[in-house]
Amino acid sequence: MLAKFFKFSERQTSLRQETVGGITSFVTMAYIIFVNPQIMSAAGMDKGTVMMATCLAAAAGTLLMALYANAPFGLAPGMGINAFFAYTLCGTMGYTWEQGLGAVLLSGIIFIVVSVTGLRSRIIAEIPLHLKKAIGIGIGLFILYIGLKNASLLSFSANPGSFIPLGDSMRLDSSIIPTLDFATDSAKLALVGIFLNVGFLLRGTKGGLLLSIVLTSALGCYLQFFSGWQLGLHLPGAMPLGNLGDTFGKCLSGFVQLFDISNGVGTMLFSLLSVMITMTIADMFDTIGTVLATASRANLVDENGNIIDGERILLADATATVMGAFLGTSTVTTYVESSAGVAAGARTGFASVVTALLFAVSVVLAPFLGMVPSAATAPVLIIVGILMASDIGDIDWRNLEMAIPAYFTMTIMCFGYNIADGIAIGFIMYSFVKVVLGKWPEVTGLVRCLTAMFLLRFAFMLIY
Image (cartoon, rainbow, N blue to C red; front, side, top):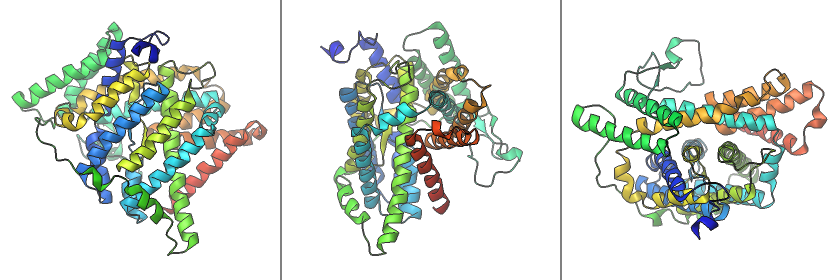
């Protein structure tokens, strides 16, 4: 019954393979349980309550993805968009966190409408094939960069052992150039994890990614608690939880407050429009990029690069955002870390069921998750990044018409540390190249509209 519902034989997988894949996705995503409350607290929200909402939103969204779309993708409040919620929406722009949740609800409704009408699937279909390849490669490089950062293998000469993202004033100075650094205990442990992963990968060890996390974590616990290494681990203990009733449903009152015209209709509409363009584009194209890249690794794309059952996947993702708003957290999106689960063998929604169940009980598991160091999960991301970047040879780099948009997509996505921005720049450069070559008629109407939206988004970024 289970195998038939999730199409195990059709996708050439097994219960064990899916279980391992689901656990791997969860372990690589679990950091959001601790990071999201820290970020959202800047908006005035209680950390314990946000942690509860994060766990439940991730569980509900991932389970919906499993049962409705039968896809091996984990969902949780997105990184980046949660920072926009806390620091820009509720910080610079002065919205309350209730209004912020109302904005998340509104953006989720927009996502649902766009998904039901098939527009999101059409967007994926109309992305040129070389840009689709570049998106997958760029996300692979992005994941590799995250892995190196989380492994404490990147540092700067101005502050050894730490990662400092480049600021607005970039100058040619060795103090801001990232270099490999093996000095910290976390970096040394991560090196062990990297070699374990490479060995398991080359030997074709089933469940090798998860096994490497377990072995590296065990070694890390021994080194910290018996040898005095500094890995930031903590023994299981009580975790303070909040009252979900403090945030549940508050998005409705916040939604109403968004349309306050006391400062003028024009001011309200301009402010709301800027918020919606930023949140819609960020979530939509983060998801599209992640799903495109991860689906290709899971053999869920056809010969044209289009996602099989893509409409269901995108609708599940959109609905998860609405669910997250009601629970009391920022935009819920498909996680790029799902690629680790796919690399471990996940091919169906049963892997997502496993991930969802682990998120559901993560309120109890949270103290134990503190014993899994980032140095254990970071090597998995590094290996997955390498696997995802393996399609780089499929792009004709001698053809500048293809190479220029692809290059900007990949590099901006990685070094700009933002999937949506990479896709946006890729669309803009694609359209610009077509204009310069006199091939503007080849650009579809939808791609033209999206290019205009991306340009408008960057214009808003100059204002806020």
